[in-house]
Length: 422
Image 1 (cartoon, one colour):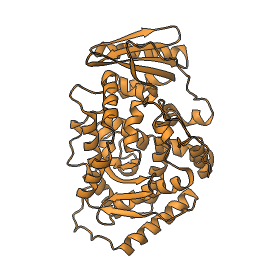
Image 2: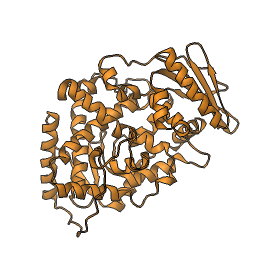
Image 3: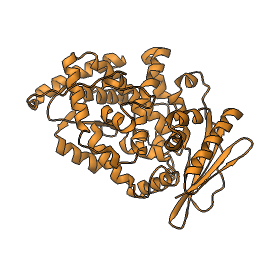
Image 4: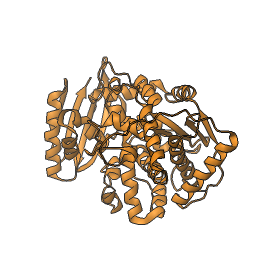
């Protein structure tokens, strides 16, 4: 099958290390399904998601908490019982996606200890590359001096990951020694990945290695679709099963102190799970499952397109190619920060709503990173859709720079450039 995109195969010249720092973090966890409750707790403030809505199970708005139930732990399933459950949920996923599984999917259940060990073993493979990403995020002011990205990432994944599907091997592994309601939801999510992979190939190395946001945006499509099917499966459960699933989901992160990890990490990881479903719903409204299939063949390439699916569907959200700004030394990393990156850059000092307002109208950007002694520096040039958008962003960046130790803003006629070192 020709998937209709460059798969980065053997005939493609290897790409240099020029990976967007947001994409780098997502690439580490692209096959993992995070506990939505854990992401929301880490990302939101006072029980609110990024749009200011109170969040309960399934990402729906609402109020109140459900008291956890007390019951004996369920028994591990036999091989036949697990196969039957996987077959039942596979049928649901196939019907929801209006596609058939090419081959059945093998599923492995691991208890909490074994699953956590597996995640921490597999999650971070290239510490040198992670160190470069850490330097870039620190130069942007998104990490403190004592934040260590690899350690924070493995800790966060150990608390928040509930299952993963590996599109390279077709392996599906789920945390849980028994078929609980939450494990069933996780199976619905991961089996959606497996089905989409069988038809559209989710392993796209060229996207993961790109210096733009293509891999980040593709993650919004992939996870948004899986969350959507998972939520549809949730609706088939009884009230008691949904309550049990929610209790189990929230309990996963109950013993984890999210204050110990930099806020930017769950903000990056949570993006495809929070905004991806909104993007996918817009696709469904535009053309049902066929429109989702078409998006896999020609996916979004920026966070702006995921955040504004209406504009993307109209073909009005293509990014502008921005020339690299002049670096102050030998460049060790460069690429696109993106609209969501701008929001993350500004929100700590401006608040999220003001950051989103300032970032709206993003047209394109390009950053370069170099070293000055033991410091890393970044310089980024932004262009916006209109002069008013440019004025608003420049004003917001002035506030950001005033709060940073070593940052400056240079406003041009058609662009604005920031320089920051840390």
